[in-house]
Structures are given as C-alpha cells and as structure tokens.
Image (cartoon, rainbow over all chains, first blue to last red; front, side):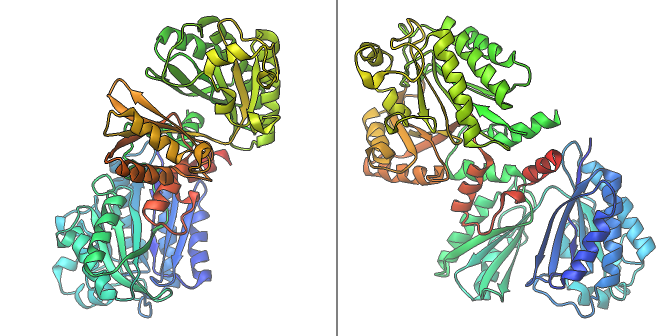
Length: 302
Length: 302
C-alpha cells in the first residue's frame, strides 16, 4: 500500500471560517485522513497536512485548491511569509511504501488540472521541476504575488508549466511538486531586532553559502515582538535540526543575542527526534526499532 | 484493548542456545508479540521485551521463568550486573489502554504462581511492593544471589512474598512487580578507571542523594576497556535522560574525564525522544501528535 502525504499551504491564517471551508473540501474526499491544520496569524497562512493513497490525495489536493481560489483574494492578502497564490504551494511527499516517482506522477496530474480547470498558472518545483531554475520555490516565488503579476505576461522565465501565462485575478499562481519530507522549523530570538534575524538567516541558509538543505528567512513576530529565523529543513538527512540550531546559537552570540526557543510547525518524522537525541546524548547504535511505538505500529501493519 | 508490556531479565547473556530456549517458551504463547531480545555479554544477562493482553502476558512470563529455572544455574553464574535469580526480575508495564492497577493484578498472579509451581521465592517490588523496604529492587537484591542465600532462611526481612523461604537450588529468587516504563541508559566514559564511574554513579543516583528516579552503578566494560555508568531511569517523567546525561558530563569534568558516548538498552517510549529534543532545541508547544508516525498509528488504531 502506497501512502502519500500532501502538505498544501494556503494564504489564510486568520479567518477561521475560510480555513474550515478549505479543509472541508479536502476531507470530503473519501479515504483522506487529515493529520494537521496549522494556521499562523503572523504569516497569514495555513499549513494543512493529509494522507491517503495516490488517487485520493490527488483529488483532495485539487479540491482544496479549487475552494481556496474562491475564498482568498491575493489582491488584498498581507502576511509575513512570502506568497504568490491563494493555494501557494502543493507538495506531495512519499510515505510508507511510496516513491518519489509516485509523487512526481501525482504532481504532474494535479498541476495540469489546476492550470486547465481553474485557470491558475502552475509552476512545477523541487523534484518535479523541469529546469534547475525551478527547483527552488523561493526562485519561482521571487517578487511574490505582486512581482509575478508585473512580469508573468512579458518575461518568458515566468511562463508557467501549466495554465495561462497570466495570474488568476484573485488566486494568483501555485507551485506544485514532489519533495522529501520537510520540517518547518523556526528559531526565535531574545530580541526584537529583525535585522539580526535576517543576518542569521543569511548566514545559515544554503542559498547564501550556509548549510545545505536549509532555507531560511528573518522575520518579525508581531504577536510576541520577537525576531525569528523561519526555516524549511528540506532534507533533514543532509542537515539536521540540531545542526542548524547550534549554528544559529553561535551566530546569535556574535550579535550578543540569545536564542529564546524554537518551534516545529506541523508534523515531523520520528527520525528527526532520533537524530536529535543521537546528537545531543552521543547515542551509539540506536535504531528506530528501539522506539516502542514504532515497533508496535510495525507489528500492527504486518 | 489493554496492552501490557513485560520486560523480564534473565541471568544469561552469553550462551545463545539458552537465550533462544527461554525466548521460545515465551513466544509459544499465542498472542504474544516479541519486541526485543537484548543480551549483554559483560552483564551476562538478557533483557526480553514482549507485549500482549493481560492474560497472555501473564502466561508467557510464567513460562519464561519456568524455562530459565531449568537452564540457568546461579551457583556458577558470574556477570557485571547484580543478580539474584535465573529469572532475576519480571516487571509488568502498562501500555496502550492499560493502567498500573492492571499490572499490579498480573504481578500478584504471576508471582504467586512462580512461588507455588516452581518453588522459587518471589519478592513483590516497585508498585507491587507490600512494604516501602521492597519498593526498590536494589534493596531486595542486596548481597545478590550469594548474600540472599546466606540470609533468607534466618533473616525475617528476607522472607519472600510468595514461595518457600529458601533459595531455589539453581534458580535463586525472583522479583515480580508493576512499574512505569523504564529506560535502561548507559553512559560510557573516555576512561578505563572504574572508580570514576562508581563515583559518578553515586553522585547522580537517587539512593545516595542524587537525582530522583535514577538508579545507577559504575562498572567496567571489559570489551571496550571503558568505565560505564549503567542506569535505570525508572520514571523519565521525573528525571529525563538529558538531565542525567548533563549531570554526568559535569561530574566527569570534575574528574578530568570526558563522556565518550551513551546507549539505550532495549526499547524506549517515543516521549523520551520528544523530551530530549524539547530540552536541547528549546522547543515550545511541541505535541506528540506532531510526530508523523504516532499520528498515523493513532489513525490505524482508531
């Protein structure tokens, strides 16, 4: 049995009724298991996580995008997090029994359908990208909704993989693709100086010469008046959370600032916890099969 | 559905054929799932972990003890770890849907049966202890097999809860009881000086004024020529692995010694990994429901 995880990000983190209607459209598809709904008021964005078999997940992802296109207006949307569409990004992630190739096939199908049926320009990204320039979501999303709107009709590098070469009038554009499990990891500083967070983000992210498989932005959390390094750990087998956390502590010390705390947004694979414990406790020869609950669930699956 | 975990320790860590026969007697009981078999040559001891419903687990625990009593001779047994019987200790641990009271009922039943049918003196310990003096296994086992043999017939504080007031001629005595999940956690030093390990164990264990819910001994690992602090973390909600690990690092520094690494023997609940990551990454608001595999297994159970 193939289990696919889908983790769409929608550009609404404040109006609960809108979030509810999008989630409803997803879970109405029979066979979908909703795992998490994580809205963020500062980002004005919600991360929805669901799983199912390939066909079911493809259908639910499309319905979520269709619903979001009716309820979110990018012309008026504001938030801390970069965004280009009502359905900003739709990643498909291989879980139990599934491969990256399965997810690439689903991304093609769903991307084509969003472009054709909803008239939303779709960019294939990450492991579904057709050119290296489209692997990185930040490159596709450069300039955000407003910047893409200004360029998409005239700049051939902005031409989408599916759908029209003009932004949907309210829903903007959407990125669709296959990728490994991603962990959204934020580190908050004991400081309200967003310039420090931006400098640290620049020091640790891959794009500016930092750690591989780390994407990061410095931003301000208005709610707690804290500067934050907001990261996507795009391949924790390459760079783990503990590695980037320690790097941020060192960078923060250079600015005479301390790390206040950190947070994981949404779900993370158990392997991340194992890697973290292995690092800090200098654990040797530890196997995932030593985790009681993993052992028990393997039994139930067998 | 009630799931009970049983983690008997048998005094054989070297002869694979003996270990196999004991494990075979356990898994022959229908409905038992064997989770782990962890022999230790230095300790000359094996930790077996299995789960099942209350009646099944009670039957399998008894059969394991019966088999061990035929195959292990305490008169000739030697090993680094303190021991008093062929079946040294039989703890019952509540898992999914089960309570401590369930485990106390099972311990009574199994303890009584080992005493009566196998003629082995049985001490009820931990949450099954009838007096405070018997809560702590180390107190019951003081003097080990040889010491108990010398005293059991004449010293009323050694009178067992079940079975005869004399040691079984080869199988010694057995402790049976209910307890919370226990984590066997060893920290190895970059030193071959067992005196340092003993001093550190004394500093961190509860019985000599250290950390609550930590039991520990300093011992020598002949295989790697390393001094080791071998611990049982008897309630990780009280003292976590990270707490004792950091305490040991500090104590080791006082002796100008470094910690080499650590190891978890057998299984550990996922909560331990969550607690460790929460501590070192200063994670805030992290819930077990954010661990993908736990969320998925909850779904399959529901």
